[in-house]
Image (cartoon, rainbow, N blue to C red; front, side):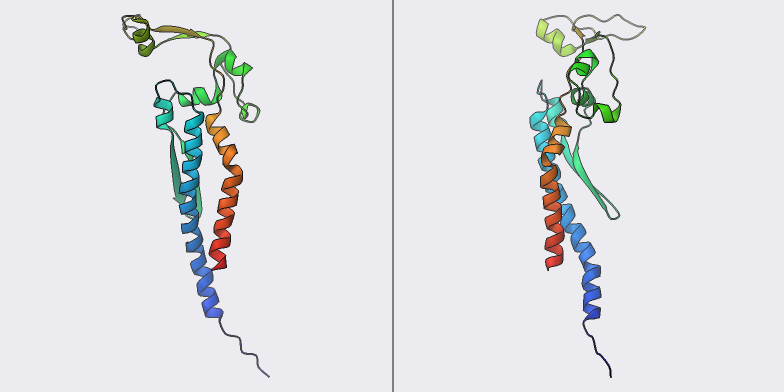
Amino acid sequence: MSVNVTGFDALLKDIKESHDRLQRATIVKAHKLAEQVAGQARQGAPVGEGRLRNSIHSFVEVNGDTVEGGAATSYAPAIYHEFGTGPVGDEHPHPMDGELGITRRPDGWKYQSAEVAVERGEEFVPYVEGVQAGKGGYVYTEGVPAKAFMYNALVANEDKIMEELGASVTEVFAK
């Protein structure tokens, strides 16, 4: 007695191809989802002159079987707005403060801003350590509260991300 089973070659071929199809589908969805997170982060970011909002962008990186995406910014002051600074930041902390072990400057400080000098109609001479004392645009601050705009955007989209990526798996393997 013998049993004849056919179709294994086609099944193996389909399994091998499904990896590539799944990765392609995941990359496409990751781009869409990352832009959603970045868009929501831009909406939640403080405005000022728009430099922070305009600096927020989506990204997707593929490294082997890993697809990573999200929102990012290279605007240096963004971290201060996200996590807060000084005593004001301590009073209004970031949701991740405890997990990240954030410590902030415990006192107020002053900084110099060309934008503030222009607003006030002051002459502005930038401070250069050891060369000149600087003139105009000085601001005293006790910090800023944490805005958590990047964190909030990610958390707001978590369920959608899981749903969309799960749907990719179903779509690929249903074919």
